[in-house]
Length: 275
Length: 275
Image 1 (cartoon, rainbow over the protein chains, first blue to last red):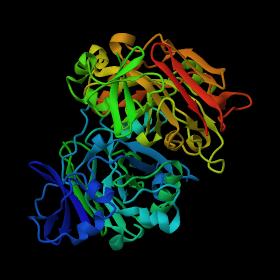
Image 2 (cartoon, rainbow over the protein chains, first blue to last red):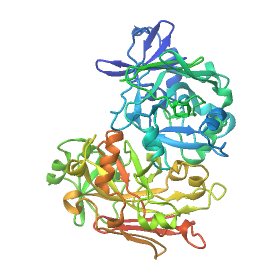
Image 3 (cartoon, each protein chain N blue to C red):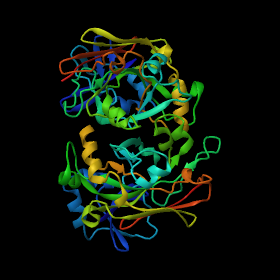
Image 4 (cartoon, helix red, strand yellow):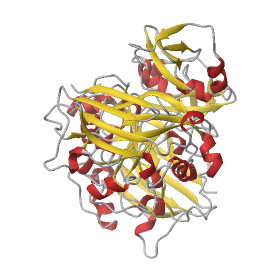
């Protein structure tokens, strides 16, 4: 099943993708579907109501305002090498705030050049929590994951690197596309073995596979749940593979007009124009 | 004016402290008071309704679920020296999630010893945003600050240091007391020149003054608003002075039964028992 959050004149509504149409659900966003213990089953069964065409539907971030957005850094071996870091013994976490998120077809609002010109791409598999999870592991950790979406952790490199902590460079408003939908684990399993890529203006910049993750989705949920309860709708981005712009010679960054396309096999594609 | 969030049988309610009593307001938490453009004026004028005694009132975190909690690290010269760091050219930001917060008299839930035994104190002045702020500076940045509260950024040092990023060690559930109330800027100005301290079981561990901040409240709001819109109810903790347990010889950490008292002159006191 694939769930999306639709923008409507009167706000947003969750929807279930059914081939060429989206079945409109009785919940404002995918977060409320997940927060209801029977919500996923009800979403799967919903029938006979309003539908809209999938093509041209205006999609919001799949969870527009998660309680938490956690990102994992330095988590693909090739990206660790290109950034000159060492493979970590534990997952490296930093945060984003909901104001960073944009929808899967939205424009990306580059900061003005006097703030930064080093805006970089980072395609990532993101997991979405489906039920409260605290001190879970193994099968229980996997069971806490509702499914996966695509996220591009678009990063402002000079702000990321001006101090020891990444947060500032990772939290710029309107820079992080997410979606297009939440594809449930019954369809994509634990998120392993999926090809992922970034292209800029049609040129492939990142191309890897989630099987190269140092810490996979279950590892991350297990570890994070030692720190805090993960809640329905929480988004955890699992890290990016090699091929980012900052590691190229010379470095390459996004500029107004660029088209950024982020794809994960079996999950979907984000297509965002920079402006 | 001092605003608090009261726990009640039927949820929470905002309140205004008036000497020995709290005037119960028509808003669920202080966040909703701030989110309403006329909310602070209405709170100041509220009269004739229900009151409860200040003594023994059950206080929630002053903003129980902020949209953002931003923390500033390495921001007092004495703490920078004791941690062996260099004074930064820019504020160092990391995040917490709302699940970290507890009220001003709540118990602090130490993680079990197999997870960590290096739990440390960090008294901090925290600002609370009163109106949306984007690309502000100077007087406009100060005007975006509704007021200040006390926050103890209780930190799990081994989790903080196991990777390059602080987040994991700063986000443990139920470890961060905040409050007791929001004291508005008409009473405490820009938050400078305030004595602050931590005691553990009555012994002074930290004692400094907010005048020793490297980046003050206005500097921080100015810089952060380049990254994103700050929203009413957002909490920004400004950093901790010297005297943390990790920098002592030998290191000192919190253990079950300890009483942690965090005070800022003109704002208030947090009294939390570790268990």
